[in-house]
Image 1 (cartoon, rainbow, N blue to C red):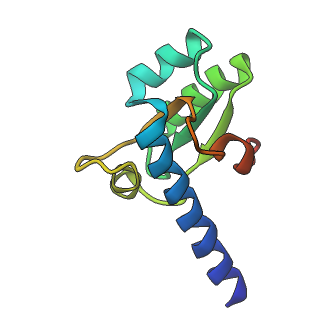
Image 2 (cartoon, rainbow, N blue to C red):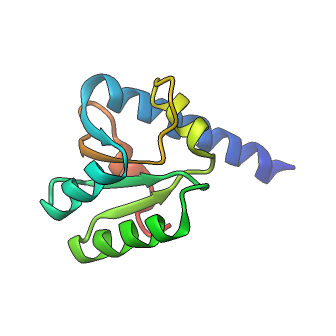
Length: 112
C-alpha cells in the first residue's frame, strides 16, 4: 500500500514537471518530430506513453541509444500523457529539447 502511494506521488511530480516544461521550455510532440530531434541530436529526454505501438517504441529507443538520449516510459496511456502536457489530444511520445525552469532531466532516471 505504501508503494502505491509513492508511485502516485512520483506520477504527480512528473506531471508537474511536464507542465513546467510546457510553459517555460521547448519540446516536440509526436513520433515523426521526436525522431527528427533525436537524429539532429537536439533532444535531451524522450518520454513514451505505455500504449505506444511496440515497433515505434523500439525504434525510438534504438535511435535514443545511438544518440545517448535518456528515455522515460510514462506510467500512463497516450490520453494521460496528452492531459499531462495540457493538450486536448493524445500524445504517444514527446521529446524535451530545452527543459526551461524544470529539473525534469535530472529528476527522471534515464535508464528506465
